[in-house]
Image (cartoon, rainbow, N blue to C red; front, side):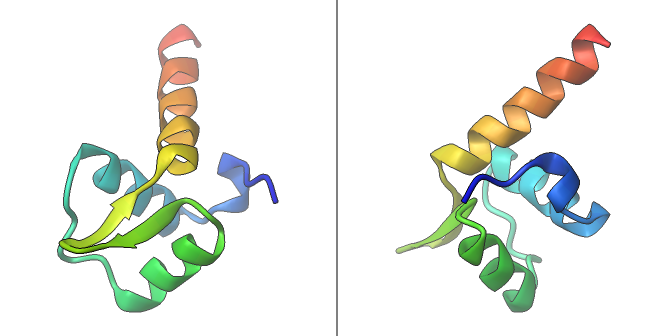
Length: 68
């Protein structure tokens, strides 16, 4: 399943951007579960963390904003 930026609502986009910068302790459990189900984040020993697919999605969006 390939997720695009437009598949995420504003809160999910914000959460993914914050997770891209590091730990996000204020992430709501229900949001974490949705992002896990979408394959963008994963459970880690220290909490929820962004994975490769999530990071690639965020970086792609940020690079497109710079170019546009």
